[in-house]
Image (tube, rainbow, N blue to C red):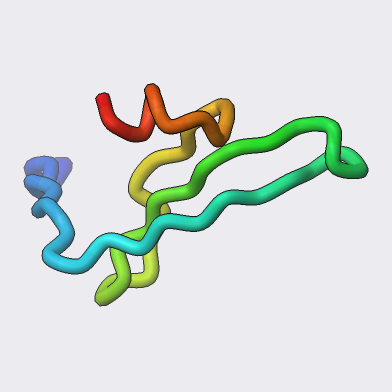
Length: 53
C-alpha cells in the first residue's frame, strides 16, 4: 500500500542565486525555497529573459 502523493506548496519566500560551474564556463540560476531550504528550480543560464518568464 502506498501513501497518496503530497501536494507541493509554493514557497512563501524564494531565494535566487546565480552560479558558475565547470570552471566558469557553464552558468545557471538557482531558485530555493528559503524556509524549507529546498531547491525549487534551476534555469540553464543567467540571462533575465528566462527569469522573467
